[in-house]
Image 1 (cartoon, rainbow, N blue to C red):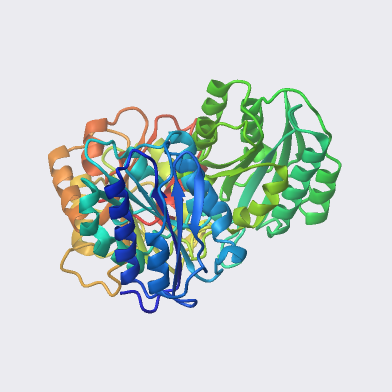
Image 2 (image 1 turned 135 degrees about the horizontal axis):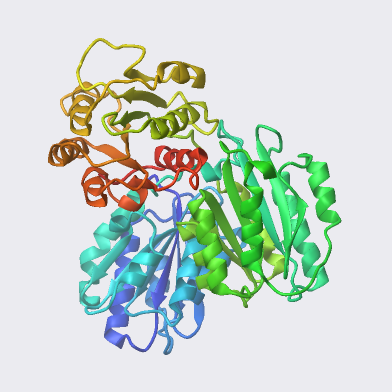
Length: 591
């Protein structure tokens, strides 16, 4: 049972007529059985219940009952509704209102939602968006699907991560009782996956790093009334007030857009709260169409060094819009280009004319961290703190991390070698990474000889850019990937080595620009490393590598662990540094 836990748990119960009366009562019995597993009380667990069909009904508020006996009686008296499965309305109602203090919500308590249904919702995209918003508010979402032969995509999509902890499925309502113990246990013991990403450091006073370039895209089209335009300005001023503005902290840019973008504040402008607030106060009300694609393209230009952007800072775009863009295809293409540049995009939809699919297509993944939606401009103030709180509360990386850079000098050209050196040295100077938790080493010697200052660099967290520039001499000896993997495994990542912190993170970054000498041997050594819980990232340079060889080496998923650089001119060093920083900072689950 949950004796020490404080949680506000709300059950969203499918009450449509697709459920037979006896099955509906089995569902209520299931809820009562779960309540028996909880310690109900004002300072322990509070339970609320919402029924949904074509409409939504509040049956039990969180603070209605402070003992399980009365709560179970109330649950037993809940009546079935009618047809329809408006899951999206139920989730919206819960995350918008039911955790508020006037409805019994407690700011200090864990917020959890359990959605039980026997079918697909009437509006998939709206349901996914509402679930994303709920999760972004810190609500942990469990989903229970009842029935066979039903696609579980929606059930899994609305649940929190990890899915195996938050998704339950039974064949019919009779079988619900079989999961009541495991569901209640999951709710009691749950821990959401932590989020620590370079994109979120721009607000948190708790993070050591706060270096970010943030560009806001203000919708100034004809669909916005002048009073709402002014509310948008006020919202931006409030969010920006929570940033630490400065040369080595957060820099802010603002673009107003309609048919064409207008730069109100560039990243190279004076960076003070007073200057930015005044620039917003003087923002022109442009009117016109909604050319979001043009605005994103313009923002991408501002992220070039000529626009005042810093290559070692997180690059973030925050888009506000109350309608669909003029050209969805072009808009998604520009957003995709921005993602490829290492830019993170938050999308904020305002009102009922925005499309969930477009908001999610523009935003970075995961959607529950990067997509917001409010009903109107008045409601923007409700998310100003949420947007400002989307931050990494821990150091980045949060766990002790060993990163060993390996490059195969038998194949690496001098041109590519210089690029590799720049990547490694920029990593060691990054303001985003915390040296207390990160040890960096370089391996290119195939044999265990005494360490030479011109060859291998042992793992250390006492690193500076100048140290690595001195030691990374271009005239290193030749080596093969399989031998380097073997040496790394024996020296640093051997399975028999005792680690003081078993939750430490270990990563190898291999640079390649040609075919492998011994692809089978390299694949074997890579497999042994992965089995020892070492993540392998492969960075390919040029067009002479073989994708099948590379994927045999890299950890999964390959879209994260294989970084392809076909042309150095098109992929600046900072783009690789940004991708590697993400890998160091985000908790890994792959092998």
